[in-house]
Image (tube, rainbow, N blue to C red; front, side):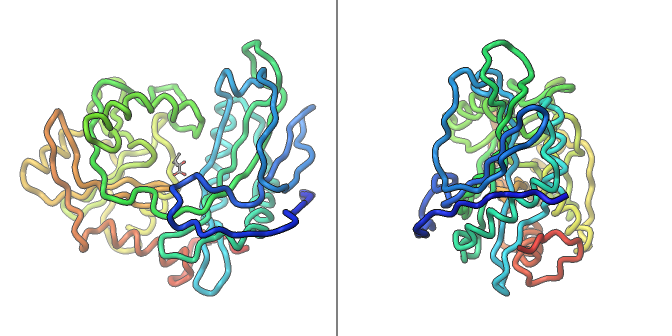
Amino acid sequence: MEYAISISPQAERTVKDTTSIPFGVQPTEHMFVAEYKDGQWHNSRIVPFTNLSMSPFALCLHYGQTVFEGMKAFLMNDGHINIFRVDKHYERFAKSLERMCIPVVPKGLFTEALHQLVQLDASWVPDAEHGSLYLRPFVIASEERLGVKVADEYLFMIVCTPAYQYYAQPLKVRVEETYSRAADGGTGFAKCGGNYGGAFYPTKLAREAGYDQVIWTDSNTHEMIEESGTMNLMFVIDDTLITPPLSGTILDGVTRDSLLTLAKELGIPTDVRPVSYKEIQEALEAGKRVEAFGAGTAAVIAPIEIIAIQGKDYNCYIAEDATMYKLQRALYDIRKGIAPDNHNWNYII
Ligand code: COI
């Protein structure tokens, strides 16, 4: 099925130097918008980036019926632009929408909207080693109603921002044993706004204590490692890449999935299994070389320098020969078109 998207470009085009602007501050010149009403998506359009006008009664403002994705487009060495893993992001978007009772955006519309928007704002894709165009598809409940209900009207939008390194420095993180991000049966696996808002308070406490992020643990025992603030978590111990399995409380990270695939291809043993913070603590106490890092679309690979466990700081291995950098390089080479894209991850514009 083809999706007709009307395009109204800015009369005058400008591209700013965005290299020193923090993540998520500078929009590109255009955005995509479609409205859901009477059981269908209507009026798909790309227009100059502008503010929204909506009723203070809009349901999303009160009951959190919102879902988003985080994706990236890259400038390849041959001058083409690709959007990374459109299919995998769409799969997760659809699952999140279902969990939040939001009508699933058709895959054709999702893909065509991304394609047209990135094509129009192609000059905003940074030509820098750690640069990319961050793409933020999202759906919000727009129906005007204060009564608590599943909305009948929605907006599907995509906005973009040039992105560089999300975390400029190796991270200091603290294992969280009091608060929970998600519980069994909840929305932890979905990329819904509330999961992030609910994480702010414990993260604020960790920041006040000198850490950048928390490591979330399971809500029953607070012993099993789940994920970190904006990323999945991975460890390398005894040369094996270890990460917790997906569950109802962990986001199905696209970078996580990509790194597991690449590790296997690079001959790095992988072990996807429950990991307790005690196991990490024991390995560190035993003087083993432990790598710890976050994996996410915005963060890519975020090395963890210090993990605080039960009030004690432990140093992780972040030297140049660390396995995480080999994985980072392998991912980079595919996205830039330096290495073959054996899995068809790059959607070339
Ligand atoms: C992403 O990595 O794309 C995220 O959504 C994390 C954060 C920027 C919210």
